[in-house]
Image 1 (cartoon, rainbow, N blue to C red):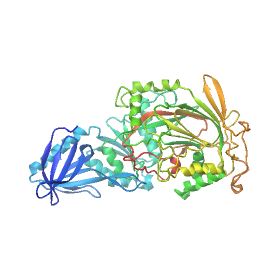
Image 2 (tube, rainbow, N blue to C red; image 1 turned 30 degrees about the horizontal axis):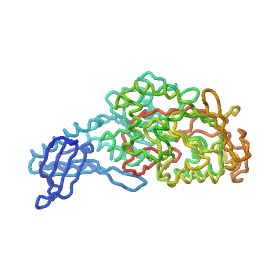
Image 3 (cartoon, rainbow, N blue to C red; image 1 turned 120 degrees about the horizontal axis):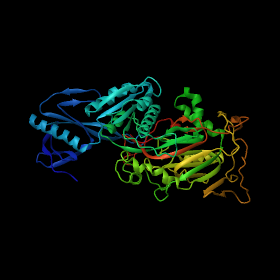
Length: 573
């Protein structure tokens, strides 16, 4: 609901006359013709006004100020679409208004600034900024000082800037130093810098709450400080990212904790993949000299090697009445599924970061659910907490995954004929349903365990282009063990007259030229672009554990991701 009128007057933009109106939530200016009739109206939400300056002011590409008594400049968010690959970009809009007197100019600047304070209370006032000077093709420092810092200054945000000199410096700083007074943490760099900030903030929050991260049964406390990412994750544009930070956009994000026997290994926000996606990452590390091309090359080589791996997957299903990975919903800005999840995860507060007590009881109810166990040979096992859309995969790994519903999507691709697996991969590049295949399963889950079959020893991973003995789809049988009160029910998917077996089947190599004498017995886990040291893991989804200075996808625009396909994709910034 609009509040009472705050200010109204005639203004000029260039040679055109306008009627400007400031209400509680909007700043509008309407062009007038010679007979005082309304023509075009431009409306800007007060929440998206970046700053107000006296005189004729320019901020980007270079700052310039011409102090005039009867002119004020308003800076605001302006949206511009540059194509489906990048979605909606935000730019800095700028309009200079001329008024009859200096007194009226001062009234406008005073009222606009007061409206910003009143109707934009979530904006950050002080930020801790980490710059990786080697990230972004070693342009991080230049990008920040030339494009981002001037916008922060315009918005009245003070920043403490640290240029990192070593790996994990940002993480260590967040774990050990005084963070009092900082509303958020901004990283300027790539995936590695974001990972440091993520692990540092989560770790610091658990330290302050006296919680043990190594215990997978502990429900972690949500972080109150926001994370900002420049260049943006999703839309690679530093100005778009900076504007989201300035106006205080807040996007909660689910985080997966990954544990092995000795404790916490890593946190994941996009992709946790075993089999194909792990092999692609391991292979690509041997060809870093190729640049981004190494991912396409490695993906091709791993596909041709035709590998599958034996494993036992256990998962804790989410409530199917709340949502489904195949319900064809999309997680857009203002997502109703995520909003309902906020009410479910934090029923007594609208602020997830402030209500720890209700969140603490979440895992106890999870533990009362029934774990489902499946065993067999897999081309790949993947867990993702977001759709992971990108130009090469317009709908992503799991099109109906949600950013903040407290669940992840477990994708199981059973061993199948090479052409069948190629069909699965190809469907990621189109709008066809990649789950509508007989050898693919997808489940919405709250936790996942992966282990090797009894008697199977973990072997050191070797990247060799051998065949793991692909089976024809009609020949494939697998065991699904559903645990119910200690009992096990064995189900088989097999052709008529075929006996289900748990013994590894071997077949003819796919391409003899790529075969080795021995194929690897185990794969590796790809955790957001990092190889995990352990094969047997437990992963648990923590609902809305962190908050980003971001918002969901606007108007169904596509999300852009980095070319590092093995790292997964992330949300629009």
